[in-house]
Length: 333
Image 1: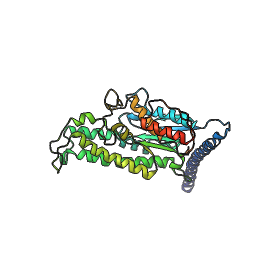
Image 2: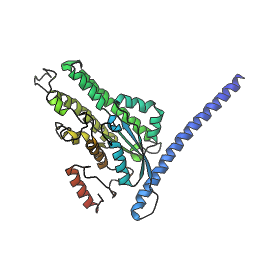
Image 3: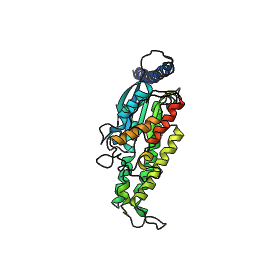
Image 4: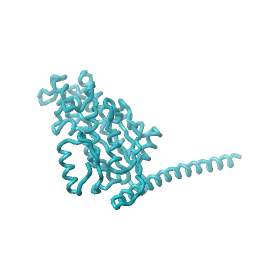
């Protein structure tokens, strides 16, 4: 009897393994078939072939930027609209952004929440933003003089190290969920992210929490201290995005300028709380994502009919897009 029970258990486990393998294979085949259909439609559409519009699933991950807190319409639904207009596809949005999330919370959920994992696994478009709450908590500790360590900056150093490590792990999770035995994620998915902007420019320029800020003896404002740590994060995002072939929107440049000292509130980009983007700010973020294109599903050199609102782009971007239109024989704006 004991041997028969063991046999039955082995058969049951074998069938369970086969079932899980079959499901994973079916999911991978489904994604590949959808990709093949989408590519076929993209290639044939300019030739006048009348085919039904393809569809893409878009999953957005992140914190209150992804949820659109502080605005009537956040960057996520704006980017969804851009993607539909620019590609001709029907885009189905699943917004999994959560207010207040840190990078640790997003990473934990991507690793352990079946709903999140399944959503990312089945998406043709994935965007994420994260890290603002990590840096905000460290800045608050610094200003309360509870940051600890040398020059009251230990928590800032720790926040940067933790965020950078989490960023790498989040990237790995997303890429692995979207990869198949036959293709890597960057060949089958429009994966986009963004760096972090600084909403505290005006406030921190007028503040000097710590009298002695470093071994050079130079007095520094809170703005100079925070900017140096934020730069480390954004430099890391730029480097890892390049390494992993994940295009990222340069939101920091758009909001804070090339030196990082421009106040996004003065530009009219921030909401009533002086922290989150308003509708104008979200339009800027969405337009930065849009300018990255839609490779690999839409080849970079392919002409795409694009409709834009006047406030979507900066004057420099408008000029660039006008030149692009001329080079490509005319785009519909």
